[in-house]
Every structure is written in C-alpha cells, then in structure tokens.
Length: 108
Ligand code: FES
Image (cartoon, rainbow, N blue to C red; front, side, top):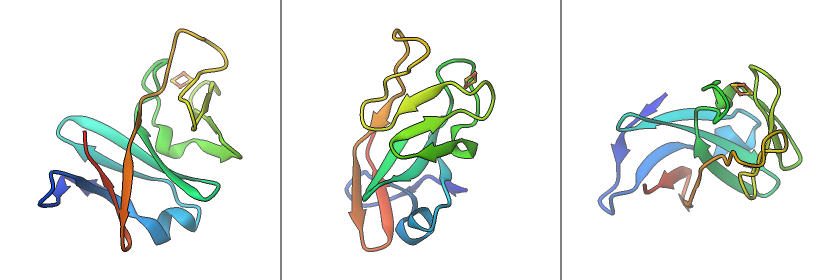
C-alpha cells in the first residue's frame, strides 16, 4: 500500500502506472481517506476506496469496461461518473489524477 507519499505540489502518489495498467488495482491512503486506483480503458481512475453502500474494499472489486463491481454485495459503479446503478442516490467519489512518469498522483 502506498501511504501518503506527497509531491512538492501537494499531490500524493497513490500507485504505479505500470502496475495498474497490468491489471492490478491498487489502494492507498491520503490522511484517513482510503483511495482505490484502477485502469479503465486508456485512463487511470482514482476513487474513494470504500464502497458508498457499506464500506466494501473497492480495490478488490472487478472492473469490466467502465463498470466497477464491489466485492461485498455486487453493486456497480460507473468509473467515468461515479454513478451507482443500484441506488441513484449514491455516487462514488472520483478524484482527479495526474500521471508523472510511472507515478499516479492525486490531490484532494
Ligand atoms: S459494500 Fe459495496 S455493494 Fe455493499
């Protein structure tokens, strides 16, 4: 797990581009906040690491296309928008990502 490696710009390194593109979702922490990082097509997407339904560990979820499925109860989230198919009132937080070499950087 990456834990609070912070760049001079206030961004936090949350993972390795090569590892995530190889299909290995990763997790990190920024302060007390858990982050999950996925490859989604050509994009790298960073989200809240805890499922908005009941806190499931989203880095252990499955990604198919742009849809992330939570490992606990199978609810699904669109990684482009955060929209939850099962409950329209829930939205998965998605954080802006910047790539620097092999580093995936997030600023929250
Ligand atoms: S905790 Fe994710 S679907 Fe229930």
